[in-house]
Structure formats: structure tokens, C-alpha cells
Image (tube, rainbow, N blue to C red; front, side):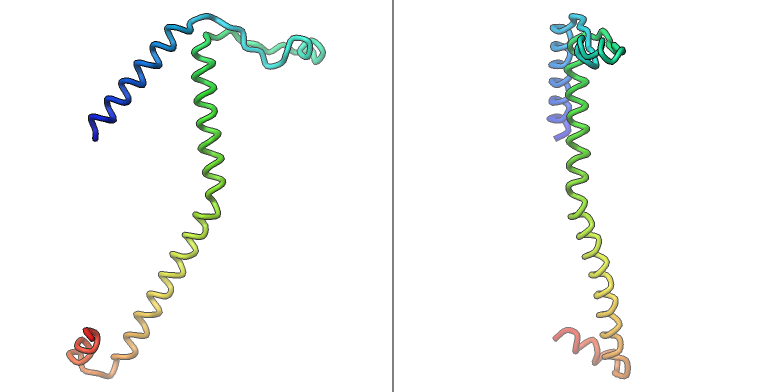
Length: 116
């Protein structure tokens, strides 16, 4: 399994290098369209290679997806936490009740009754 993971990571790195070499062209990335930038009086732009824009967008999308999914699953995690607390409480209560049931009996007889 470890070798499959290494093979996948090496092939992914190779694909990323090929994409980077094929998309080395410098492109201007602007925050706003030209007319809107003139109207607001700000023109924030940066010159980047195309592959940096592709990879940056992909990484940003993956991070947003992870965050969205983590927030969506909050109710399930909270329910599991609540159920585990309730289970621990009931198990401790059960052990207390079993202890009270066999408190005045002989230990050997109590063990024999538990087997049944």
C-alpha cells in the first residue's frame, strides 16, 4: 500500500511539473475589471504564470471544500459526543446497580449468577 501511495504522489508531481512547464506564460491577474477599477480608483493586479493561477485556484477550492464539509458535519459530531457521554453514564450506572445486587452475597455465587 505504501508503494501505491508513493507511485501516486510521484505521478501527481510529474503531472504538476508538466502542467507548470506547459503554462509558463505570464498573465496579469486583476482584482477588478479595467472599467470598474478606473471607477473605484484602484487597480490591484499582479503578473503571474498561468500554472500558479491554476494551482492556486485548485488549492483554494480544496480548502473551501474542506471547511464547508467540516462545518456541515458539526451536527453529526455533536450528536456522537452526546451519545458517547450518555453511554458512559449508563455504563457506570449499570456497574453500580450490579454491585448493589451482589453486595450481600457470596462472591462465588455472584460469579455463577453472572454466567447465566
